[in-house]
Length: 307
Ligand code: CKP
Ligand code: MG
Image 1 (cartoon, protein in one colour):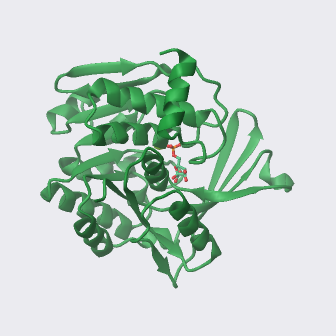
Image 2 (cartoon, helix red, strand yellow):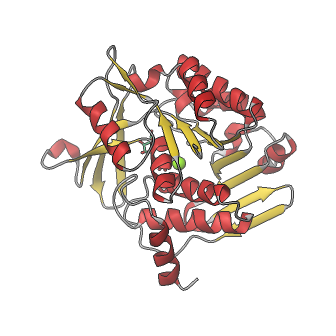
Image 3 (cartoon, protein in one colour):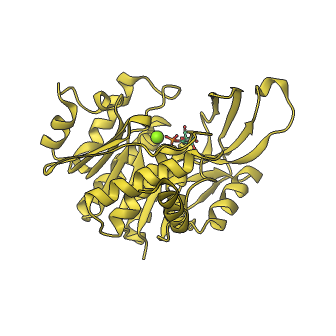
């Protein structure tokens, strides 16, 4: 039984604690919003599957091994002989700034096809399908694959979530309005407050999305906390007061907490509680996914904060 299927590109990552141009020690790992969410759900005890393509190379094998070690179902991972595993470099020129460089154009991860995504969806029959706005930005075929898999999910009554995850290095905001074509098939939208206008021209974007059939609009605003909007009203949770060490991956931690609570049939309040606690836990240590919480970790933070 698959609880959640997610599709997207996972890259090999190199991270340095100072400007990369100076050389020196680097930490080798993996990165990718969708696989971060899959790891987050697996750590919280759910059956999560990730579909993506990697090169038939050592970085690709690192991705497969890491995801397997984290308990993510990788049976739909495809090794490509034609293209390479994408690469992301993170360097920290100063304590508060993390610079990201992508090397992913033409990568294996951008060669996703509709057929492989829809076949995996049909075989996995997951309770939830999660996609992000990064995948359609990768290539024409990845965009078509995202549209076709969310349409197929919706036709099979599989609940679809979309995290906008706008990436200015991959496409312009005008190009990203292509994400609107996914909306008829989406149940839950995750967006930061500055991403909503990508999805709608409505003067009140949240209202516009709810009026157009989105069931839940979940909006994050960093230190100001998060909101969940449904036809029944709006709920807000402040951000937990933790020391932020590394905010990359916080959005994915938030999404995995939210979707975990959804899978557990929790109330809207409890969904937002688990999401904000998971996001807060993740930012307290370095790494996109390394610092994602387990269930025990969540109770630890809740107790520390006295909430
Ligand atoms: O929105 P987040 O900071 O949670 O996303 C982080 C991920 O997939 C990171 O792992 C990186 O590889 C990426 O977003 C991306 O493609 O930018
Ligand atoms: Mg994000």
